[in-house]
Image (tube, rainbow over all chains, first blue to last red; front, side, top):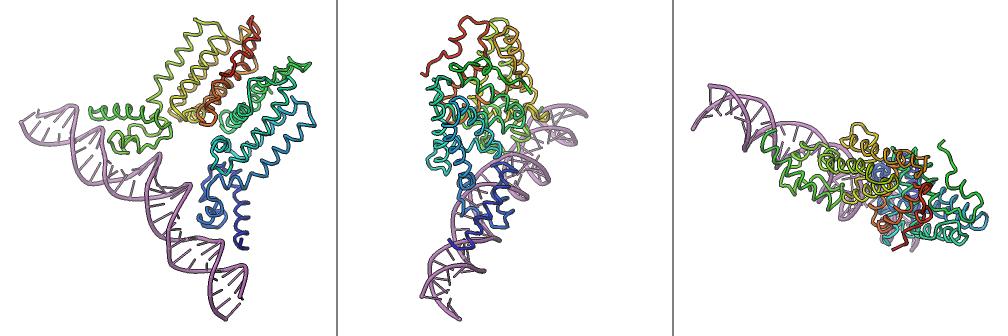
Length: 197
Length: 197
DNA sequence: ACTTATGTGGAGCGCTGATCCGGATAAGAC
DNA sequence: GTCTTATCCGGATCAGCGCTCCACATAAGT
């Protein structure tokens, strides 16, 4: 890659990062190009689709989340690991408003630039879930795809301005549905723990 | 209203109904106008915004849902009434792909044509919830807005092609989180009843 | 210094929702 | 039955979107 191209690419990524966090993933591609003092065609050549741009921008975040899942698998109890990781996933999506819709579309579109990252993420969650299920602390009638769907739904809730204030609380509600509390001594405490703050 | 205007209005509503169920609420306004053999301006004068069109089209459905809530309040047990009504709400949204997003935006936008309908719907749900809470069969740390958010999230799940197959199952998961099963003799059966079909 | 392969960005396409305004027409007066 | 007028219609137009093409600028290699 030519030096000026590399420079443009890096600059575009930096500008896109701030633009996306400010205006959500639906920000106009033209706006990103304008803010980078670059033609729209240049942006679209480096990143032919919105998904491609997001992939380049978020793949380190994806890696961190999957890595986190691996760490939790050894450092925490199955139940704590699962819930903590779910919370991290949902919290992460709040930084990029609207990314949830693209991810749910990407997970079964093998052509999407985000496809692989999403599948990997789902697999990481499935492992944490299976571990908790084996320990008897998570209900056994859900799988990794269900978990992915629940994360997506909670993330979507956080994206809706009118529902966002309830997102944290509803996370606890849904989490209580995933956990059985079977092998936990404080099962009841886990079912209705966190009072409305 | 002049006779030709009334005729156009009715015709547009009929055409919009089929167009919306076929292509979702994001269908281009121009397409609706084209299918009705009418200029775009005509459609937009009768229904200045997409919300206005939807309100005219769906307000009978909204009325039916709130009426249904009233009936269930006297005909069924608090628990059954709540779950049955929630299921009806979620099922109804599947007929109009994408309507959930507009509804969540409308519920706190007093300018939206859908605002009143959404608020009424939330109130109907809140009453069913309060009744179940009074009977001790629904968790007491959620309110009508939380319920609305959960319905919206489940409806959104059904709108996503990749997650839709799990929507019914996840409805049961979330429903189990809302219900405590306290006053029910088959509490355990309610917590993990429906095997994956 | 010259050539060439590569990168660039303005112009233009088809699409969207929205607005304007000249012409068509139904409703009401006579 | 005719005429007036208030109402309604819809083609033309605008700004915005993602996207593509291609004449031109320029960095890299000889």
